[in-house]
Image (cartoon, rainbow over all chains, first blue to last red; front, side, top):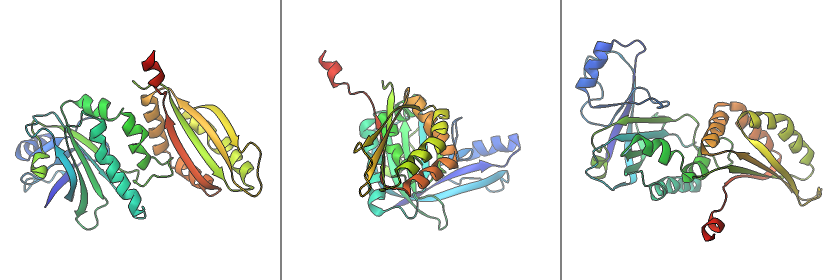
Length: 193
Length: 112
C-alpha cells in the first residue's frame, strides 16, 4: 500500500488573503522556522494539496511513498511536531550500503526516545522525482526534534556519516528537504494502520 | 551530556605519495578546518618510518568543543563544495581513508 505526501511552496509575494484562504481550505502543515529545502507546507495526503483555483503556488513536490517500516508507539498521539526528511541516495551507491543506511535510520528510535511514531519509506513515484526516501517522525515537543534528535551522539556520531561530504561512506545527496510543522494529531497513524 | 568531541582522520597512503598528502593537508585543508572550528590536536605517522613498497598511515586528531560546534563544523563543510573536492583529491592518493568521532568513555567515572 502506498500513500502520497507533498511539499508545497508558495509564489514569492503570494497574496496574504489568498494564503489564509488556502490554509483554511486545505489540510496543510505550516513549516516552522528552521525548515530547510522544502517550501512552506507539508501536505500529508488528506484531501487535495491545493484547492482548485488557487494560483499562488510555485511548486507542489508530490511523492508517492511505499512503507519500508515504522512504529506507532502512541496511536493517540496528539501533537505537537511532525517532521519529514526527503532525501536522495546517490544512484551509484552500493546496495549493501543502502541497506545499512536504512537499518541505521530505523535504529534511531531505539536510541532517541523522543521519537514517538516514525516511518521510513521508499519514494516510488512519480517518475522523475529526485527523492528516494522519506524519513518521518512525530515528537511531543519541538525540543524532541531540535535537541534530543539533533544532538544525539547516535545522530551526529553514526547516522550523519551517510550524509557527510567529508566521510568516505557518504551516499546521500547534500540537497535535502528537512521540514517540520505543528500538528494536533498523528499523521503517521494512517500510514501504519 | 557530551563535551569535547575528537575527530580522528586515518589516511592510508599509497607508497611514495606521503609528501603529496602531507602537503595537501597542510595547504588545502588546515586553514579551512580551523575556520570551521576544528582544532588540530596531534598528527601521527604509522609505521613510524616511510615505507616505499607498502602504504603508511597518516593520522590527524582534531577536536571541537561540543555537539553544537560539531554541527557548525558539519554545516560549514556541507555548504562548501571545495571540501568534498579536496577529499576526492586526497582519496586518489590513498588506499583507504576513515574518519571516526570519539568522546570520553564514562566507564571509569562511574566506578568512582
